[in-house]
Length: 79
Image (cartoon, rainbow, N blue to C red; front, side, top):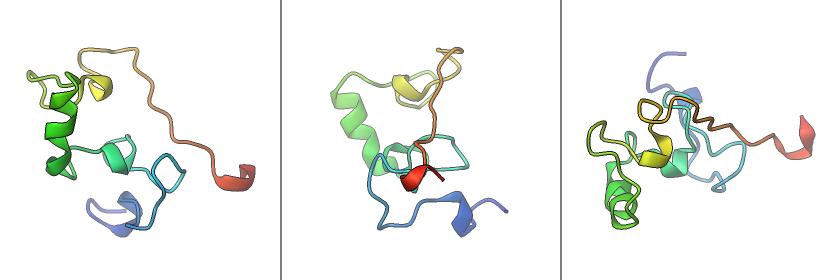
């Protein structure tokens, strides 16, 4: 799939925290992806969860936290 294709991003109807709520391009939940949705940035900054050096939430910054594992939730029904 090419960048920006529908398979790369969650549908607008995806429930946050679900399998469908996943940004394949950036490997984080779509509902938390500041690279796809910059309007989320102030909320992360307000909770002191921001890496100014890399422009990402600290909780998503693999450069600062090389052992960080963000895993996609399993599909409903265990499929």
